[in-house]
Length: 83
Length: 202
Image 1 (cartoon, rainbow over the protein chains, first blue to last red):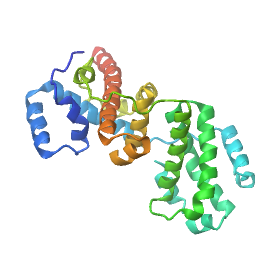
Image 2: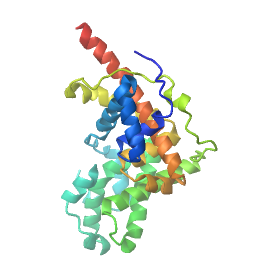
Image 3: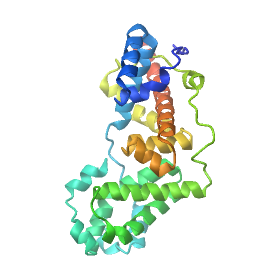
Image 4: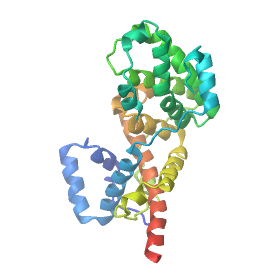
């Protein structure tokens, strides 16, 4: 399951490739390589998925009450604190 | 991100500029969670994050008359917060610009986990536990990588903007972003690899 990916030179391009910022010729080179290399395909696909996952919107937890109170006090906005 | 909640809350820039305190309170209400979480993620210290939170609004209050609306109000505010957080990091003498910056291919590839977990169902990928693993992986990134990752990937700054804010070259930002992303991918691959093994033995 764990193994070293031996595809030197291409790893440094995959982040830009996923962002669509890789120059076309490098892009073609990487895609050609991926069609022949299962390991690199897995790395690219799971990296893309990783980015998708952490970009999923998560509801921000509410600010802890005591932090909120101190913030509103510091800004002299106590009168407007609704909770 | 909170951009949407701010847009939905119809905060009036004119009222803010006129010094309307109720309007400023609405701005704080719509944005303070995000700023606190952002500062906490960058600084990993609740007290420092709270300082950043307070100082950001104090700076914003002072700077509002000069705000020209070239960016959205939330973007402007979050940049103030990021700058405050970076200032604190620098005070802690965190060196955000190390000497050596070459991407070392061997290092990038070392221990790369090659589990294909893309086939896992969405509810497994987006479970509370997997989110927690991801959070922990972000927290475990070294400061130099985490800051780049937060600005570029979580706050959506461009490579150029991230470079500008951190005093780095664009190449350095790209390299660090790659390293951060690969580390997160690896951590998730270990976790999802375990899930795959569990699923197949069930």
